[in-house]
Image (cartoon, rainbow, N blue to C red):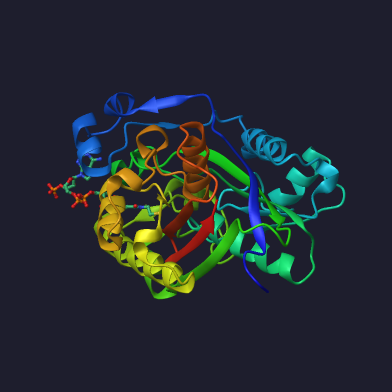
Length: 330
Ligand SMILES: CC(C)(COP(=O)(O)OP(=O)(O)OC[C@H]1O[C@@H](n2cnc3c(N)ncnc32)[C@H](O)[C@@H]1OP(=O)(O)O)[C@@H](O)C(=O)NCCC(=O)NCCS
């Protein structure tokens, strides 16, 4: 495979309408707006209504990406859907989306890699394209994290939000130098219990007891996650830029996973990238896991920060521990 082999031809994002501010959280949690802003940079997040499905706002993001790419549902050869919060366990939400879009020619599957899920999915989609599984693939990252977050746990409830993002990845034409230049993925399962859900899986099926003890909700060792995150983000930026054969100062825009402003600042500092070249929008959305990078990309585009030819670095970390990065020419 000679790169660039695939390029992002269109992007879209969406979030539930309901906004929950830090001041709203002050009403139910022992926390303050000042603490949350200082420690995380987050000011508000979008939270779905209980009867609002993940599919509903994901469909808006997918349609926007397809419209921008100029592709119809019938043009899609495949759908990779990164999520840890599908609407139901079986079948995959990718198949629900295929049906909702009417993408009759597309294969579809879900990918579970937590917050770097969209970066993992871009990498997998490019790989599948290179082995002949299609020329036009919809790559989705979308979450309804409010369904796995304990609203009474101040260490997690302040961080997470709901949202969806998508892109259409298309095979490049021979004269096109835009597209994915390098990818890098990593994982360390020894760190699983830094951020995990103890129950409600096959090992511990959902029971009244599981729910009572909140074992179906996320548990996190925040300080340890923070340290592992800075390490993983730094390692990922170094690896992808090296694989791309470019110097770090070639990066025109860093679009990192939006988890914590201090993690983003440490990553940028490590890579020698000034914050003026870093896309940050976690103040508006909080941490939306696999949706965070496409949500940030769409906002960067709306703000005129994405220009053809720019070198963009996407980098993320998350539960697993997992991490990954993608370098592309926009
Ligand atoms: C969770 C996180 C914001 C906490 O910030 P921190 O600076 O590490 O804070 P600590 O956990 O050390 O806690 C400091 C104090 O604030 C308190 N505190 C924790 N959450 C609080 C909140 N929401 N409001 C007010 N005080 C809070 C703690 O109880 C602790 O009090 P103590 O000093 O009396 O013991 C931070 O660790 C973080 O963002 N970690 C990464 C999490 C992440 O990105 N997860 C997603 C991965 S994809």
